[in-house]
Image (cartoon, rainbow, N blue to C red; front, side, top):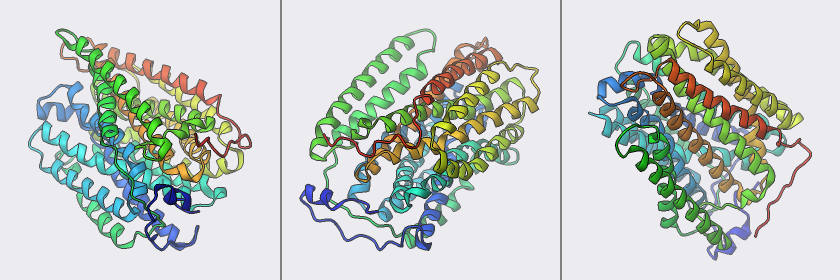
Amino acid sequence: MSSAPPSAASAAGTPAATPDVPGPPGGSRTGLVLAILVLSAFVMILNETILSVALRDLAEDLDVATTTVQWLTSGFLLTMAVVIPTTGYLLVRFRPRQIFAAAMTLFALGTLLGALAPGFEVLLAARVLQAAGTAVMIPLLMTTVMRLVPVERRGATMGTITIVIAVAPAIGPTIGGAVLSTLDWRWMFWLVLPLAAVALVLGTSLLRLPAETRRVPLDLLSMLLSAVGFSGVLYGLSTIGEAGGTGPALAWTSIAVGLGALALFTWRQTRLQRTDRALLDLRPFGNRDFTVSLAVSALIFMCFLGASAILLPLYLQTVLRTSTFVSGLVLLPGGLVLGLLGRPVGALYDRVGARRLVIPGAAAIAGALWLFAALGAGSPLVVVVGIHMLLMAGLGLMITPLMTDSLGALPSRLYSHGSAILSTLQQVAGAFGTAVFVSLAARGSLDPAGIPDAGGLRLAFAAAGCVGLLSLVGALFVRGPRAREPEVSAA
């Protein structure tokens, strides 16, 4: 499958660059390419949540509030959401090898800065650098799968991608807890740094992907509108529950400015895409299957990254008083369930389609979140483990079918933009979920300092449960395997 049709290059009026030499689809070269990308992305995405079990320790060590320190996770996700829209441009303008080298270099530099960070501000900047590199890797990985893997085997292959996109952040808290049990939080960065360096060397040496590049302009105004829009809405949502002063007024102002910027961003893309100059081509939204799968994916990532990866470690440490190491171990079985389901669910999707998988998956997620809302200070750990495994099983039934269904509904010329849209909305949803749920937990707490207690966390889990129910409603609109619209309008 060609990475870009000849008409795309000719329409731009610029000859396509000589493509890298590809291997045959499904051959050993394809396997090597995917292995390099999957392992590199796994190391990078692991860092989304590796600090989640350390939020309490970091708040004390860096002398900042819980609602502030959560920006080490929210800021990571938000940066990804801001950078990912540019990947549609990057995948057209540069070769995959160049993109990979730039992404891994940014990530490695951010990891080094994090290990050396003297305070919260520098640590947050390090997370931003890490996220900028990670953001580029996800669409590169998904677009590569869509271009190199035959249609009949995409589900199984995307099951492997699930291990990266879902399992890495799922086991991040476990690895973080293990590190913190014996070492300082800085070792979360020192231990990752050599892995990033090895991935950079291997990738730049071995990575060869089919690519036809063309010169297209980078719309800086669209980048600015995207950054202002996403950051404004997220900042407002994360601070809207703060009491006193000008906090609420500033929060609503921030949300209004963010929504206005996003509206202008959307308007500008619809105009620029008529001449193939959009930073993020929005024509994939013209496909019904893509839009439905995208919406459901956003809802479950709110629950996954906001509730499972952030709220649950807070509950374990602040309510059940477990150590960071025990908190990580509690989350490990669920992460393993998610990983084990990846390829089997992908293979099952190839046979039965998405609908028969996502509906029971959404029901499991919603049920698990409401069960979390019923937990209290006396709940046994074995119950927490069981509910978390149910939540991860539900996610395992949904993530691979939704990703494959959404991108598979698009024509090949829109793969890069479709994967950028999907990745952007997943990260935005995760960042929103983190900010809103942590804010609700702090707001509902009786603690004067706003440290989440059982009551505050119960409120936050209930809010997540409502989002879970919305995902169940959305799952009902996912269609079976034969009802398919392969193309979207070019208008």
